[in-house]
Amino acid sequence: MERIASFQVDHTRLQPGLYLSRRDGEVTTFDLRFKKPNTGDLLSNAEMHSVEHIIATLLRNSPQKEAVIYFGPMGCQTGFYFLFDSRRLSDSGAIQLVKDVFAAGAAYDGPMPGKSEAECGNYRNLDVTLANVQCVFYRDLIQNWTEADLRYEK
Image (cartoon, rainbow, N blue to C red; front, top):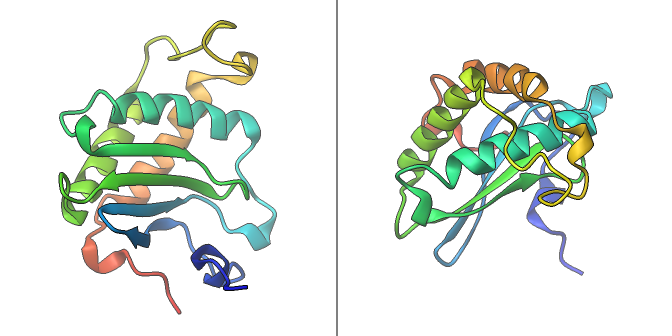
């Protein structure tokens, strides 16, 4: 069987950042890596879930919302996937969008989107403050990111 692209990334050398994972026709996948897996310092379930709710909401309410296909957590708890329509949003535009939504997530002080039993099957572990802390970290990490930085080190 062919190894999938994400298994070809050397997770022992993985650095936090924003990376181009793959292109599938018009769909581009960015990997938003937060933690190094070999340190054991992974995002907690509550951190992952809280960031997901805030950032997915901000992406789907952005001026580029028609280009947004998906934003969600990686099973390995090292970050998130962001899928977008490359016919509607360039790589540089997607980088700027990610910067914008994480800056907005860092400053977000409203109610947690989707924090009710009717809206989310695990609404109890959502926390705006946890999301803010991770959004500040990632906002600062990628503040100078460009297309040249999207490549994983081989």
